[in-house]
Image 1: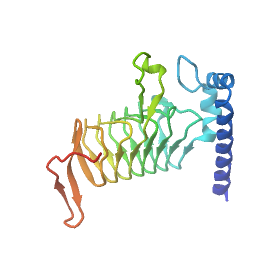
Image 2: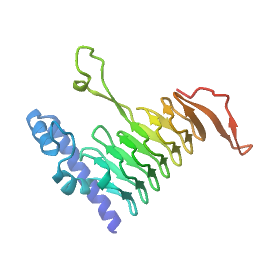
Image 3: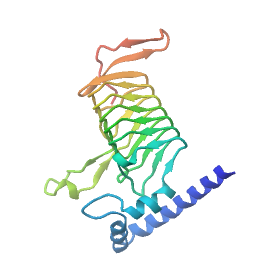
Image 4: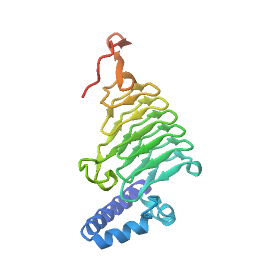
Amino acid sequence: MRGNSRKIKLINIQIMIDRLKTIIKGNDHIRKLILWSITPTTNPRPRFWIKCFINPFIHQKGKGAIIRRRSSRIDVFPWNQFIVGKNSLIEDFTTINNGAGHVIIGNNARVGIGSVIIGPVRLGDKVGLGQHVFISGFNHGYEDGERDSNEQPLVKKEIIIEDESHIGANAVIVAGVHIGKRCQIGAGSVVTKNIPDYSVAVGNPAKIIKQYNFQKRVWENTNNKTMNQ
């Protein structure tokens, strides 16, 4: 019963947030005032009162999950989701930012020391990130060559890493990439294209070097064939 009550409360809160978003988007003065109350213009981090009194009621942290906040930069804002599943671990010196899109981390996942996750990003259950992995679901727009890219709209493309995939230390996953289930991405790789389920990919740009053959029950070399578009 308590679980259902919490879900109902979260749904009602989300409905209220959606309504507020509609009101804010329709009034530029209100939008600027509210944004200023949430985060300083020159220092885009959530204010103390947002961290303590707003985010805990909006974002979700599963039972047994650990976020080493004291030595990490968890810049999460109330207008997007930040969900950490049961028994997941976010290690020291991590940076997480959901300002541009949801950051959703599944159950029993692990985010390694010094990693960076910038939404929109979705990690499945038992996903493992090594040390200093960089994952960003957006790029700065630069279509107008006569304007600073910081003044142009962000180009957002969600990154999805499916269940039980592992990303090696110092790897980079670019916006829009979808990594399938139970994949292994080599340390230092730069993943620019989708990776299908049960694949091993390495290099810059990363290429698939092995895929699992369920009939033979072995990992087979792929002769460095290029990844799917």
